[in-house]
Length: 203
Image 1 (cartoon, rainbow, N blue to C red):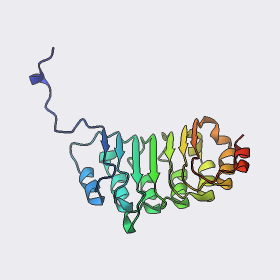
Image 2: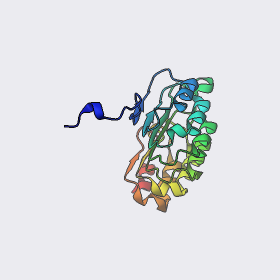
Image 3: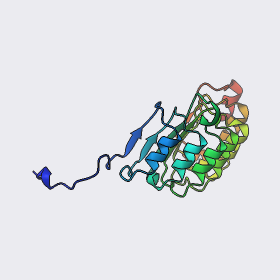
Image 4: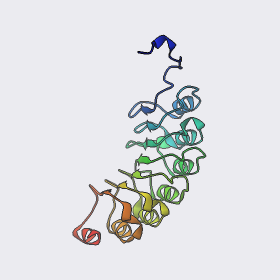
């Protein structure tokens, strides 16, 4: 057995690849500190949901080389007040980032995630590896869903969560009519106004 005394000395937390900060009090300043870390640079998964991050915080994250290896990102909040909500500016920051090219799973929550946010995601060339998109409890509207369904991104997705996002007939029609849905394995439409007519478009 190898003598542990001969193991290379690494800085604390330098091997950390998953960090869950869900429901803490971290804000933009906390993300700025993480972004400037010289040791936590191997994160593959980061959960900052239910925190007062806001668009400023997402901008810091998106433009920090520290997070260049992220494969999974969860952000947004159910309780939005003032500049703590994530909106179009935050979504645009993610989709234009020089570093977030390895994302395979993206979860954004909150009613401020609306049609413009979804269009930024749909039109981005950053997310060529994205396979799982979770927009639970958002407000994409029919326009946002149509933009997503007609985008090249949609043909990559294996899983799409639109639960509690006020998806009605227009959204269902957009999803069901696109020829790009051939790879989709999981579709969550729970707690939406899905009627019998909506179901008829899915079958």
